[in-house]
Image 1 (cartoon, helix red, strand yellow):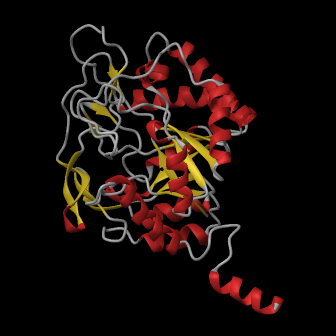
Image 2 (cartoon, one colour; image 1 turned 45 degrees about the vertical axis):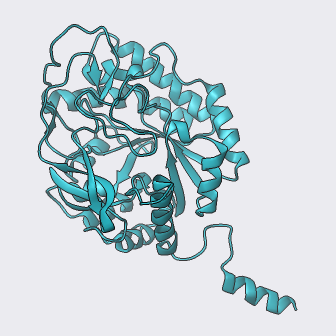
Image 3 (cartoon, one colour; image 1 turned 180 degrees about the vertical axis):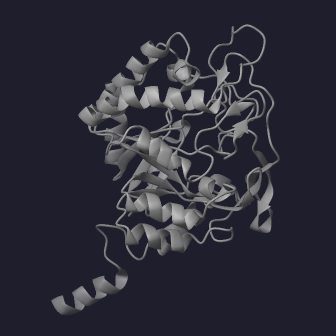
Length: 371
């Protein structure tokens, strides 16, 4: 296993790459979607939460991320002594009609296919995505973690309808007519996912890129009046079975799985890691179940993180683990401190030095022999 750090678009700079290396990371997962652009509720120093107005504006619908900019990012990450493991999440501007089954669906599927080819050419092995109409919505912030550290959680169901022109918690059309988005059914959403996989998995196979599906966060049957796909652990299997392929895998979020009301998180870790279907792993801790849960420090929630890592190791998982969220700590750099604590815990729990490094004891033994 390898330790990584997820970085938002505004954090893709040399300072944050050095921070990742200093914390013992070897890999980076990059968000190119700008969740903080024009949002009235998100702070760049924390994870995006937002309100009913969402995370702000989606990106430029006419400008998909190009091979050149992806290759430049790979070079910058490489120069920092790290590896760019994945791009996490597609911009709603680039695939809103794939999610909504709208008139631009075929055009946008073609654009996503081009992006997958660009990722392959740039040497980026994974594209994470969340096939969701409502996206991550309904979370709140509060002093939920140890010592009153600020973290996110949920305090009840959220089914405020989504306005037209919004999907995945971002506004893709500021000029949309008034009214709310008509609700889809669960089966309609599964059919849309099947269309996506049917179109994109063969391209991913040719490009050498793995598609990695995130479960629904928060994991509820509906959010904002729209259906969810993977809100219980067994539904991940349905997604895999829709289009069997080594390139159809999971962005495996342990925190979201722990929030689910059915199943057992350790059985889910075992089931999907034994199948070799984990592209990479999000590992955070929580207390409670959706829609009433709170995120915690990585060592204090309901999840036995060491047990999760042991299952992954036993089943031969050799991918990247990142702490997707962490509480904000009381200091001048709340995000950095929270992430450093989580990364230090994970590094210690991952049983010794990172790949390519020697433990202090081993180094001392080798020096003794040389002398």
